[in-house]
Image 1 (tube, helix red, strand yellow):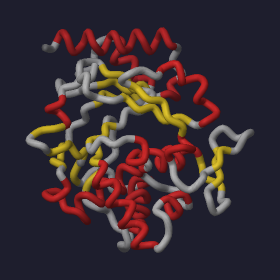
Image 2: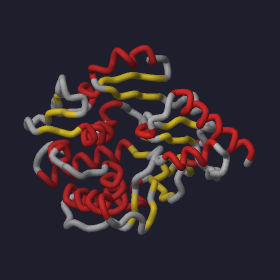
Image 3: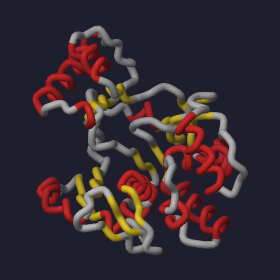
Amino acid sequence: MVPKDTEHCIIVPRRDYPLFRKLQSDRRRVVITQDVVPGGFYHLPMAKKMWISPSLRPVRGWIMQQITKLSASFAVDSELILFADSDLEFIRSLNKEVIYSSEQLRLHRIPDAKQEGEHLHWHHRAAWLLGEKPHYFGSDYVGQLITWRRSNLQALHTHIENTHGKPWYQPIAHSLRFSEYILYGAFVEHIVGLEASGHFPCHDDICHCCWLPAQAKSLSDGTVVINHRAQALLLQSNLGLTAKQEDDLFRAAQQTINLTL
């Protein structure tokens, strides 16, 4: 589903590596979280979703996932990075022009969206990490199939370290509420500047998401409209679907987009 010159990099904790090792190929690497994320984070043996930071503070698995994404520059050499979460699957061959055009990389950015609740807390934390007073940055940057530039990610690390006087991962690891996508989006738009960042903003969602059972049902009965630019389908892992139910839904999505071509 992706161009042949695209490398697939899977990052998993050391304890899970034996389960994924067989997926290695000439186009896919399986790497270990502890070998990629700097600082020496430790995965607690009896707590699947809990880590210990270099400063010996506990780190929730959700935060560690985001630190791992922010460590992508240590896992790959490619300038262009596309994140694909484990509960999504491509439903059509990836159209590179959707994410990369005229040497500019897509930045998922929805102006004036999600200014309240948890998302607002994520903006406030991003502002603190960037050395600014708490505020909403004017757009939401959270989505699926998010794209980053490696050079901007490295610049973000440097900016946080210069702001806080410590390794970039330490203040992030101590965060209880945090979004890596909002941090990166706010940095490239408001610190680097969109024109200099090598990104173009785009507000449509290129992944059709089923977060709730009703959304999955509308997909199975064919009553949902899938955006013609959608490249993938996400089935939220907490839906409790069997492997067969997931396969049926992915086939239904592909049938839906074929009918609308």
